[in-house]
Amino acid sequence: MKILQVSHSFLPFNFAGVEVYTYNLCRELSKNHKVYIFYRINDLRFKDYRIFYGNLNGLEYYAINNTFRRYDSFESTYKNREIDERFSEILEIINPDIVHIQHLLYLSVSIIEKIKKKGIPIVFTLHDYWPICPQGQLLRDDYVICENDNYIKCIDCVFHQLSIKKNIFKHYYIVKSILPNFLFRFIMNNYFLIIKNLFLDDKKMIKKIKDRKNYIKEALSMIDVFISPSEFLKDMFIKFGIPKEKIILNRFGFNLNDFKNSQKTFSKKIRFGFIGSILPAKGLHILIEAFNKIKDEYVELKIYGKFSSYKGLLRDYFKYIKKITKKKNIKFMGGFDNRYITDIFNGIDVLVVPSIWPENSPLVIQEAFATKTPVIASNIGGIPELIDDRANGLLFKTGDSHALYAIIELVKNNPSILDDLRKNILPPKDIKTNTMEIENLYKSLLNNES
Image 1 (cartoon, rainbow, N blue to C red):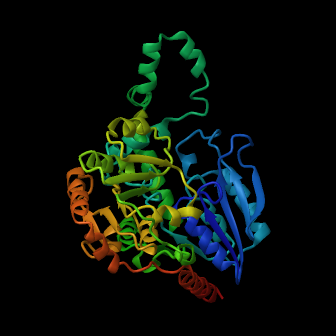
Image 2 (image 1 turned 180 degrees about the horizontal axis):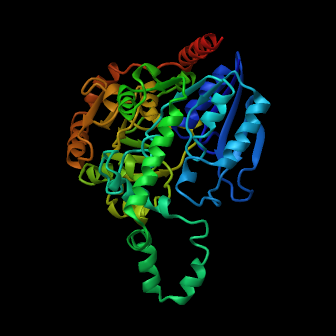
Image 3 (image 1 turned 90 degrees about the horizontal axis):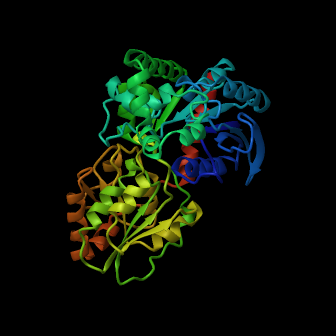
């Protein structure tokens, strides 16, 4: 088979969950099939929509540059004629037997129609809520879970996308040189709010959001099979309008060879760990608030992850996290290469996943289980499908730093709990098994086509 995988990002530019899973799947598929990857990069040194062709460990890739310099409307965040045209050219070159979409963020939903017109079966793995929610996480800027039919609340999250114009910051430095510093800072800190109140029409904005929803639903109707890694996400997309017979439950697979030499390093301290993107949705602030209350010096918190730019209402999450961090035993370890994830787990005793958005099926929890590392996590989304409370991990009420503090205290005062939890941890699915399942799905679709 000739298989084309489509993703919003890929290695070596990003090592997040979708990218790592897609890479492992492609590597395994490539043992018996010809695998290609089409994905987006963001490189300001080159023109938008330039295609880069290359080979990564035997995987041929086509990377399209999309920096959003030419982004001039809300519609261009989900349908892009330039990307459609480039993708169509690549589709002609590869002529794949099947296309497997992992994510369309930063790309174009319209490529689904291009694929379907050629009669090629399409598989779509659901990783988050991006087809439903422009933010992808069903989490509002005030950290409240969103009811996706409340379009007024949608406006508050995405009006900066709705209102943006191509040259909106063209005269940034001119304005800065003219205005007094205090006035310039006020305008920049309240920029989106000012634009929204002075220039935007709620009815028009709601129509744009509804148009997005309807357009994506129509495009998704052309997908042959959806893969959901959790029951929770599956149910969410059934509510969105995807026929339940089109969605199958299939857990992620992992390259368990990467974890076979896992061995905890010795420490007199109980080492709690946070591993992942440092974003509000990941709830690191909840963990730090809880850890600040811990008085014992024989515990520490290791935070692995890069600070990402977060511009919702121009909050500076980085500064906020630094401001609330009170203890010396809270250590920021910086970003990491996922190839060395086992070494990170070897240096922690328990992983904490304090997410405040309805996570699908966090890969980091399953990586923890591959190293026999117990997990403390929020009771939200698909997380309870992975963690059996008090058996292989511990769950706490989402967003409740007091509840998390109580669990950390429990573990600190009764460290043998971690040994009990480890006994019940089972390894996640192997990528080889997962690949066989995916292969069989591809074959069944091709047989149906013939």
